[in-house]
Length: 127
Length: 170
Length: 88
Image (tube, rainbow over all chains, first blue to last red; front, side, top):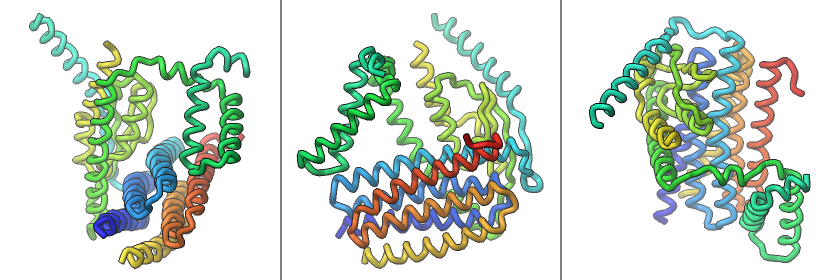
């Protein structure tokens, strides 16, 4: 009976996140932001529902299959999300109005070089 | 095909045992016909995919410390995923929809391909960011709000991966 | 109690998949439709798995397995067609 309550918690939590995923798909303004709904909410929602089902099934074979499906979805979903985002970026799909762009490449390179020289200096000091 | 198998006998036996164990686990019966079918198919798969070269993967020096760091990383990742989902849920369910999306271009200093894959997948799964592109060490990230975009660089999971990379270099 | 929860989840997921079809129909670009179809696929997999429990006919789990793989390959094909202009 306690197992049923734990399972119900996981199932309802997963259902909530799946609903949030669909609502995000409908409400958010452009492809890139919709991808957030797909990549995060669907992954955790599926994972939670499958964990809830695992509490209900008392059979090692079927639990193994459920674990396999869970691992597959958790690895496939980010890959698909990344691929869709990459395709959208390469095709030049327009973003929503007022999107910003931060070019941090040069600055992070400079910061990294500074950090490396600092660490080498401190190591020399220790020696 | 067979020459490759002979060259990599330990790897082939490893694949065969792995496939056979998997078959026994999902077929859940000890009838001799089931076991025969499983053995035949495991053998066919091992012969045809003998170029997978599993023993080369085995030979990389994977120490206990690295396994421990990897497990710590995954526990941290699950916590981050839950936080990310709650933040996305707050944004989507808010009637005013408080987003300010945009793109951040930054550096990725990791060199091992496994760690790069882990890094990119965990960026996709953590608060408000998805990876758009990763060429040599140029990383393009899409962020959902502007606060998130400023915090991508010094991020706890990245530091854990850098620790693991430093272990590999030693 | 748990069966009621499962039935509510199944009905809710079917209704929200119908809502996601709105996005698949009206999405301004092709990629919106791909995203919507991915969400629907995930929902359908969960519905199949819950039916497998409710009906206690666990062969449906294998169906869900094949469904996940098929959806993955299908999405990959569409994306490759969009990126390179050919599949094979």
